[in-house]
Length: 386
Image (cartoon, rainbow, N blue to C red; front, side, top):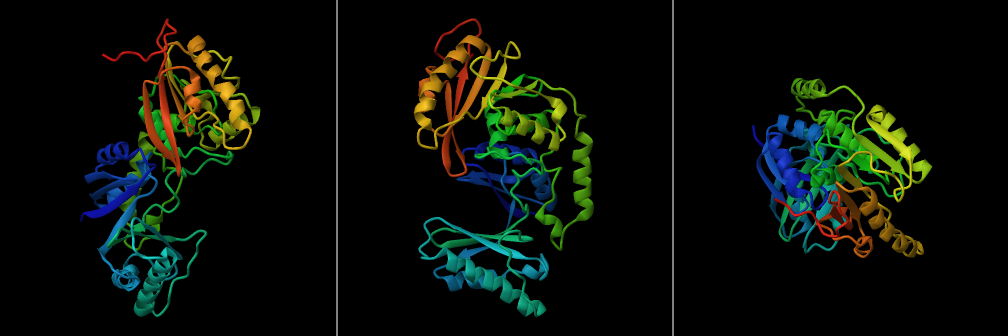
């Protein structure tokens, strides 16, 4: 039986997520602002959770209808057959987002949906589920437009960019699904040399190693759908086993990481070890401005510092022109991709970007700047295609 789903993702990655989900067997795939709608059976849902590198969640659409008031939303939520899908012992949390809704308080809408779910359970079982805002077993999402409300049950649990490793975090981490999207934008393919010369906590390198070894990103974690009452344990076991069987053994890959800060290199190493991928990547402590390219050609992806705190911007304004000089001197033959949330700083690199791709890192609007360094030349214009 076909069900309807919606997968949110970092804004800017919707067309790529649509392609990815279609390749995983999703039907009626439609990219919209902030995510992708699709239909499929429960096996498609399980596979999307396990295999998608770009989705943030997979949400199952339960009910939708028109509303004028909070009472209309209560009635729609009360009418959904919650007790068929999870038990009264599962803790719940309600999330509400809205676009152009005339209702004044989303907190009140959240309360009304929570009351509807609890009242439904009390009618069916005589008991009501508890709310847990920190670590709920079941997440219920409501999305309001000007006159319609849609209710979803989250099949993922923790966001899908939480791959189940990463003990050593950094201050402003790059989400794993955004890193995977940038790798896709770069056109990097396994076997091609890849470097992150400002590696932070190693997100690009870990995602690249998992892609190269065909490791499904969800193999190290569990999912909310495993608690649903209609969960098909045999189908899920079969999907997981197929993914495990495809996984290639760990081996040295043409992946390189470095950072001028020794602590960042240590964090990357800790995270690679936690993901079981330490042998895949060559790591060293090095200054991007002076380090040599590890191969004659390849792909560079990096998330360089951009000024958030006072005083940093002046320091970075002096650094970015040096990035441009380093690229011209040492990285001929490479395609280089810089993520930046600052529109002004990349201009200081002094090279013409051949492409700028808008992306959002959470609420932060960013651009991925592409610089194609032409072999044997210091010209400041991009490679001509064709």
